[in-house]
Length: 260
Image (cartoon, rainbow, N blue to C red; front, side):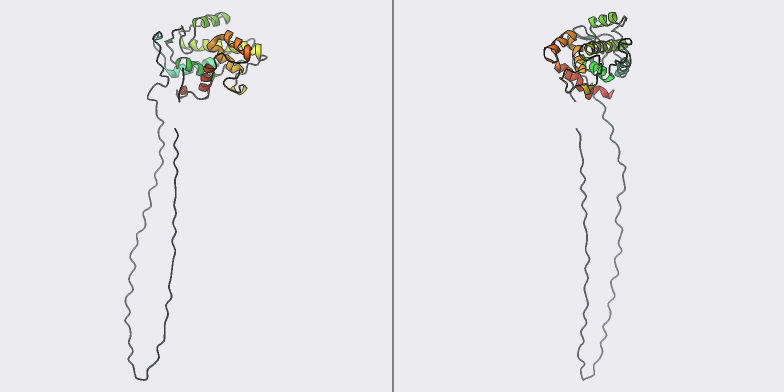
């Protein structure tokens, strides 16, 4: 199931202008005095014009910048149409409840005796569940996979037998635990055989989405099973389903599910 997921920038240009001042001189010349008497002519002074009143330029009022509300999704981000052979069983829980269940599954210790420090990261569990079901808790797929983690009946039975549990995959919380428990089993299996009992599922251990690091082998194993994963790894240090692994790793980096 593939996931698809614009920023705008504004540039303000400010232009400033300047002004200059200028002035002039007055020059006065003396006329020769004539021998005949002359009458003195006094020039009347003309009144100086009164300066026109000036009005102050209005200052623009400051407006507070308002934050644009984040757009709410108008459609389901996980809008894959189910195949005709798949259906819904009962009523789905909200995605908020689904997220809580998935995060809770990440807090459990699945190997308290032999590997108590082994943890399954919450973002891995959420990303697998998002790809498998879109966090829709009541999907029953054509191959028998059910619920948030699309747990197969054989996987449920294996986990219950191996860990002496009685999980019900029809319960969304237990469905999340079964899927996380299976991821923990894959981590222990591959980590013990090929990584010297180093169970670190950090993305920093992987050069690329296609490199055969422990995290990628575990993701590949969740989809293809341990047999196919191990066979391809031993044949050429490759993944048997790199496309699936890439989709899960992409969800771990940025997921539509993060809005819930």
